[in-house]
Image (cartoon, rainbow, N blue to C red):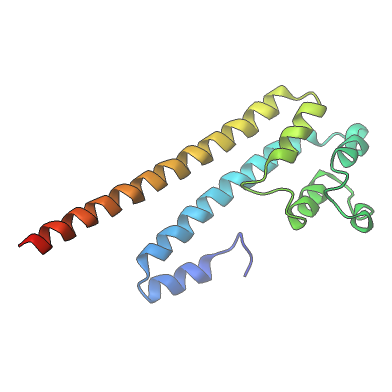
Length: 146
């Protein structure tokens, strides 16, 4: 199953009434779409044939030498970086490095905004779960006192 096509999994979870897991998959899918949109924006900004070799050199050490010959454009570069786990929703350092080295401050700001938003969402989710845990503990305490 492709990571960007989770319809079968969502149908299955709905069929077996695993609502919490279904909600988690939907959240992941939403984050993944935002990430793909970010990559598209970065790709459009960085897709300059004259500077492609500089982008490859920025990624040196992040992609195996035997795979570098297969990289023909920014999109295959992103794909290879993802395969090597050097690029992903939580691995944006390489995009920030590219933005800095290619003198694209707007792009750097955009990547950092994406990263900050994701971190804030994760913090809010952790806080929500912590609060739910405290509420459950309080309810159990009250029930046990009766």
